[in-house]
Image 1 (cartoon, rainbow, N blue to C red):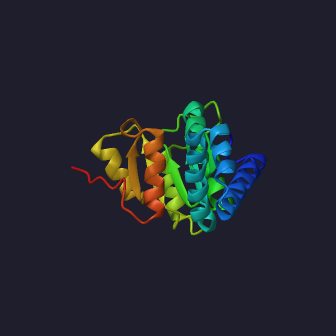
Image 2 (cartoon, rainbow, N blue to C red; image 1 turned 60 degrees about the horizontal axis):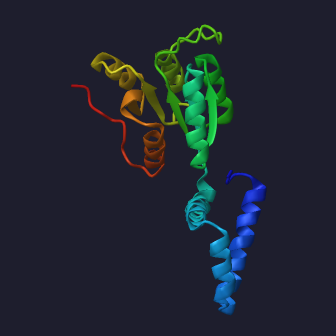
Image 3 (spheres, helix red, strand yellow; image 1 turned 90 degrees about the vertical axis):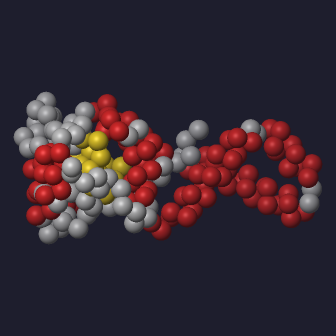
Length: 196
């Protein structure tokens, strides 16, 4: 079930209206038939998603991910979109710089190793990070490194270039990364592991 599909949303809205009318008129037999006909787990899943999206309507966020591994990029896209985010993804640093400036995302996640020669990329994530933080149009966008580099020197270099945080891919599931993005938007400090 695709909860972003307008037809699905309309169907569930009609069900919610039906539920409200059922409670208002206190005709439990109608509600009982609805529950029997529809899996309660699906209803609760929808309600949780619906209520979360209602609470986030005025603050829908856009994520830009610069990741040269297209399989990972697509996996992250699915997770972020399922959580209600708008997702922009690109395999090259050059395109990431352009998207950051033109689309003004709310959060940028950049892989520091961009071996995207096939996609035509020529710059790595460190250069992307530096250019984003030096550009007046993008310098205030939170930028987090999302990489497999785990050496203190790499972590230190990323923070020196202006990274707001640092995530090691192997330490996080995609679901945990989405949860961390939500924490960032709530103003919580994440991904700020100090260099030893």
